[in-house]
Structures are given as C-alpha cells and as structure tokens.
Amino acid sequence: MRLYFTLKMALNALRHNVMRAALTTLGIIIGVAAVITMMEIGKGASLAIQRAMASIGANTVVVLPGSTNIAGVATGSGSKVTLTPQDADAILKECPSIDWVAPVVRARVQVVYNNQNWVPAYVYGTTPRFLDIRDWTEMQEGEAFTEHDVLNSSKVCIIGQTVVKELFGGESPVGKHVRIRNVDFRVIGVLKRKGANLMGLDQDDILLAPWTTLKYRVVASTLSGGNQSSANSANTAETSTLSMIYPYLQQNLYYTQTTMEQLDAAPPIRFTNVDQILTSAHSGDIVSSAIQDVGALLRQRHRLRDSDPDDFYVRDMTELTKTMASTSELMTKLLLSVAMISLLVGGIGIMNIMLVSVTERTREIGLRMAVGAEPNDILRQFLAEAVVLCLLGGTIGILLGRGSSYVISLVLRWPTAISIEAIVAAVLVSATVGIAFGFYPAYKASKLDPIEALRYE
Image (cartoon, rainbow, N blue to C red; front, top):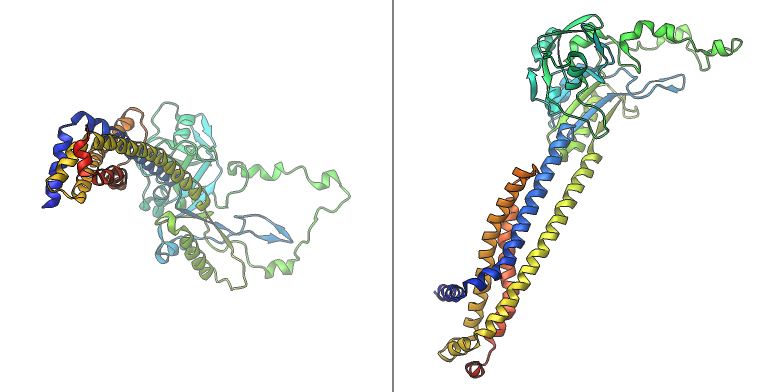
C-alpha cells in the first residue's frame, strides 16, 4: 500500500511539470532508441554475414583424395584414387554431425551450343544435395535434377548465369541442348546469381550434372590440370622433353619400377572413384567434431592401420568463419558502446534535473516532514519519480528505436533484425539508470532539516 501511494505521489508531481518531465526523459529516449537501433543493425549485419558464409559453405567439410608418391616424387593432393560414392553414403549414415553429403566429379571440358562454346570454371558431376550444401536451392529458372536422374545417368544439366550469358546471350536456355565432348545434355534449370566468392572467383561460371552421367559418359578419369576436352591431343603437345634438349642424356631422372615390381604393385584404379566429397555439418560450432567423425570413419573404411598416414585430406572453413564472426561481434560491441554513452548522458541529465527539482520543492519537503513524513518516504518518492521518468523514456525509446531500424531497412536497404535481448536490456538499463542517478537527489531531499526547509524561500 505504501508503494502505491509513493507511485501516486510521484506521478502527481510529474504531472504538474509535464514539460520538465518530457525534457528530462529526452536523454533516456535518445539513448534507448540508439541502443535498440544499433543492436538491431548489428544483429542484422551478423545474420547477413552468417547467410553469406552459409552461401559459400561456412559449415562445409570437404574431403579430398590423398597424394601418391612415385619414386620419391609427390604428385600432390587429389592424385591418389581413394574416395568412392560408397564413402559418401557411409558418411551420411554413420556420422551424426553431418546433415548433407554430395560426391563430386570434377571436369574441365568445353561446352558447345550451336556455334558458341565456353569452358566453365566449374563443371561438377554431383547430386541434388550439392545445392543444399551450398545454399543454392533457389532456381532462377527451371528446376534442378533429381536423385532419379543420378541413378539413371540422365543427360541433363543446370547452369549458372555466366554460362547462360556466354552461350545463350539473352535467350532462355531451359529445354535447349548443349554438347560436352559430343555428349548431348538438356538444360533443365538455371541457378540464381551468386556473384563472386571471397577469393574473387565467379561462382556463376558453373555447370552441374548428375555425377554418374559425367563420370561414365563424359570423363572417366580424374580432373587434371588441363582441358579434358583436348585430352586426345595431350600426347602430341608434350614435345619439349629432355631428350630434345639433351639428346645424349637419359630421360629417366628417377627410379623406374621393373616389370616384376609393377606386377606386384596394386593397380591404381580398382573401383568407381570421385574427385571429392562435400559434406555439411549441423552448425559451425561442431565442424571440428564432424571432421573427426569423418576422418575416423574413412580410416576404418580404407582399412588403414594406426601407423599409416591418412590417404585423404579433410578441409573446412573454420578460420574464415571465426574471423568473420569476430569482426561482426566487434562491430556490434562498438555500436553498443556508442549507444551506452547516450544512456550515460541521459542519466546525468536526469540527476541534474532531479537536483533542481529538490531545490525548488524544498518547502514542500519540509511541509511533508512537518506533518509526519519520514526521511525514507521522501527518499522513496524522489527515487520513484526518477525511475518512472526512466521507464517512460525507455518505453518511448524502444518504440522509436524499432521504428528507426525499420525505416533504415526500408530506405537504406540495410539488414536489420529485431533483438528481444536489446529490448529487455533497454528496460533493465532504464530502471538501473533511474535508480543510480536518482538516488543522490532523493537522498539529499530525505536529509533536509524540516525547520530549515520550511524557512526556505
């Protein structure tokens, strides 16, 4: 009951000085609105960065074949034939940290349409899950191929915007046919524009087809450094040899296996292989766990002993994700710090006005004490006034901040996202500011001597 009367008296006192109360809350209104707006802009930017990272595969774990070593010469990553489609199926079934898996067969081939030709930067044979992993499920036109097309080795493909521009100009490519190494493919879809990646490479310069079609009908070997369309002329191109430069020297600079050693050695290819396996973890927080799960499973499937090195490589984008996340967090904290300065200025303004109010209402305080009010009653009244002012300013500031972030997203096209945490924090901060900066004026009022207060002019 005492609290009710205290609040009622505080509201009556504020009602008698509406203009002063409005000006007092102005600092809190601006501060809270700044906090809400900055936090929502920061959260929107963070979500935009997360979406951008997801589009380039922030949660993606790439499995590559290992490297062979022939007569002391390492041939580099991807030269060892170790990965199979069965490995991809096993990863999906036995690794709980993995959401999607897509085997990938890469090629570097020429794509021909009528009298136009183009060599896309990326020619991938894969499954529809590739689009889920790369967050590329939305099509500009047409539709994606299905698992049924993969099982049947259907001669269909989907292409990126750059390939459309180079081969078809302004025409729609859906339903038309292109040739890849004299194999006829029907274009069934066009991918939505994605733009350049962080390395500046064009992600739209791409052609996707079922991996079974690309593997069995187009290229049977793994991707080499050159254009596989001109593989037939590769032997004639190798004219600059040591025998031409030094005809009297022996060509073989490294040890060559004997016939018996070659017979004893295992054949390089004994199964259908893929060039890489793309996987997507549940979230960026468990990428390291997903890498361990995939590595342990592949070592078991490839029957590697504890002393044997991995015959595969596992790559992820953890470092890039951490860098982008830390940058976004730093920006949000910076914006919040700037907004908090506004709240501090508003709190100082409230303390200043409340001190003036105590001075102006000295006689009123003395009169209340003379009729029986205790110092604690005076303390609670002035403290309640300060808290009410801050909460009122905080409420208006929340509405103004939400409106400001909406207008910014509408006019400037900046990404914003509602932040419940910021709203709750703004209310708590407003009440805290009211208590912290209103306590001293209230305490000063409660310590006034009634006799001196009644004499005050």
